[in-house]
Image 1: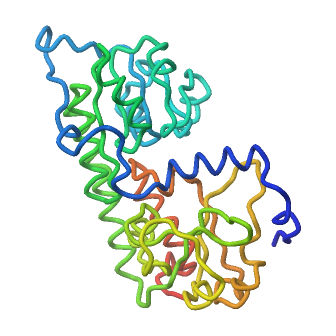
Image 2: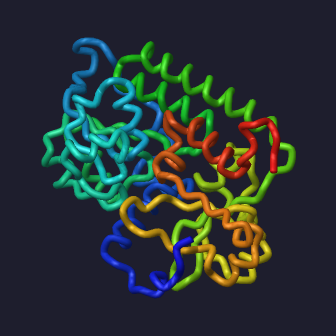
Length: 316
């Protein structure tokens, strides 16, 4: 276990950048930009000359949007992505980067000469989206609801946007098979364990995921209980509340090359079942919280991490 003097250091520029990316991945429901719900479900019409929409130069905003577009075979049409477009890895490595999805610049986006903007619902800021909506470039919003049904619906919606409904249906069917397998895995859980998602530490105080968050949703899909379910959204948690929550495991996002804080070394966490048993689970942020095509696999991996004996048919 990594010990805790690094937690006393001032936050580095790299840590600040990681926290900004984390916020994009774990933002709560309803954090939309300028779009309203009615604008999220009308893809441009297909057919030669039917709409005049050119789909050859796409700016993709949102890691899940980018992942689905690649899975549908349109990676070569994407001309720029945002900083949360981490999968597949070549997306952010090979494509121009227009910045953090919640801090977009209209000039930066439009400078890539897009013919179509495909934008995750939680992007912003609103004034930038207003400018993009008034530009001559068609803009399509994609919902970011974290649920199993929404994953499948997103795939079908983007298949309609890109005029490949059959290919999207094949991908959607594969994802549904994955969710069916996940349900079978969950059915073998006899006693749900409590998991606390910690996004970051702020002056030694954890910022945790409550109800109505993507972390809450993935914990449920993995057959566990959210130890912070009494909270709503992402909130700081006091030492007393951490001890009262009594998580069996603590869940965090991997930080790549950057060191993760030693959460379990904090006094309050040491007194929880997670602290006593050293149960800290770290997973890739987009994989865990993106609610894209890999979500069934992510939830299954989380379930096996929370219940180590689940794959052998028994629990701890």
